[in-house]
Amino acid sequence: MSTVAETLARLAPLPPSEFSEFGDVEVVPLTRYQQLAGAFLGRNWVTIPHVTHHDDIDIDGIGARKVAWEQAHPGAKLTPVVVLIKALAEALRRYPYFNASLGDDGKSLVLKRYFNIGVAVDTPKGLLVPVIRGCDAKSLGEIATELAALSDKARTKGLSMSDMSGSSIALSSLGHIGGTAFTPIINAPDVAILGVSRSRSTPFPGDGGAIAWRTMLPLSLSYDHRVINGADAARFVRLLGELVNDDTLYQ
Image (cartoon, rainbow, N blue to C red):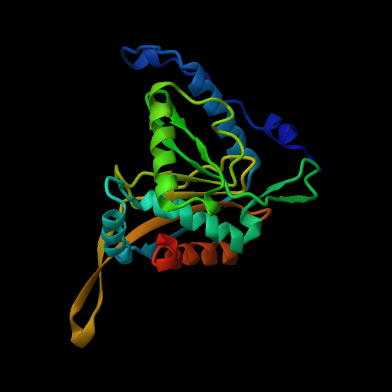
């Protein structure tokens, strides 16, 4: 059986391009971070058989719960990302194969007993992924506070390797910008990553033929098909939809 390196070596090389033949150009060097991130993302994309499952979850229930939670926690802000982080921790507990990594031998699976969620943060240097540890044992308020602190550190001081290591699964949200779906690249050695797009009002059949509007949140779950099958991916996303509307998550 050919190795990944042997397979890549057989591919035709990219043709050289002389763009200046077509007009003025400017050559700008990639930053060190862009070079490192590009190398890791390229490796993850070609070595992991990605499949992305897209679905919408109903988040109408978050609105009223958010108001009640913020009234009970003056000064604190609850965002859908914080709720999803907590929901992911519970979903990982119920679906342990999502909280796993392939062993170095490629023949075993390392099942993790911790629940650490990486969250992609947009910074001037590019995306960084700080890790919030022990999310299963932390309250929504603790998660919100830690996420805000790590996000600020990522944008100002930068993150250490320790800050970005040890994740169970990652979450990447573009909801504050836009989009309806995307295919996030798995952050190896994780076996899955959850993408979040912008929520939207969607019409549904209501009583007596009326139209009922619900707030739907598009989720895109990329998973390693060597470890996770499509049916479990669909169940995992459906479970997230149930968990974000579960009162016990907000206690």
